[in-house]
Image 1 (tube, rainbow, N blue to C red):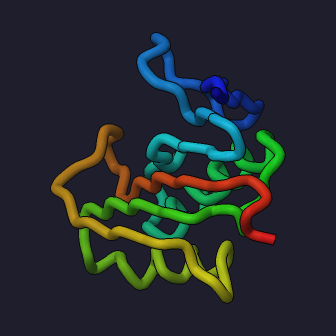
Image 2 (cartoon, one colour):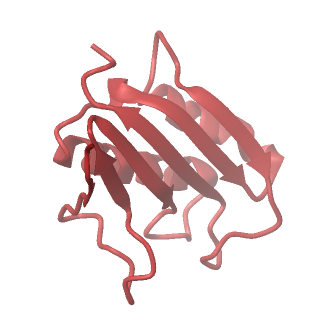
Length: 127
C-alpha cells in the first residue's frame, strides 16, 4: 500500500503551527489544500493567478504537471468575481478541463481573500 508523503516546496510556505499540509502525495495522486493569495489586496483575477501559481509550484515540485489536475474546488466570496476567476483559470487550463465545483461563501480565512482553490491531481495522467 502506498504511504502518504508530504510535498513541501520553496515558494509555498507550510502553515505555521503544523495545523495542516499544503500537499500530500499517495501513489500518483496529489491532494492540495485550499490555496489563497499571498497578497489579498489584489482583485480576484490577481488573487486567482497567485492561487494557481502556488498549485502549479506544488504539483511541479512533486513531479507532476498542471495537465494532471483532475478536480478543482473553488470558493468565491462574491459571484460577481466569477469572470475574473474564469479568466485566470483559462491561463492555466485549456482543452480538457478539470472537473470543478464553484461555491459562493461569505468569508475566507484571511482578511481580504476573495478566492480559495483546492486541487486534486494524478501525476502522469494528463499526458
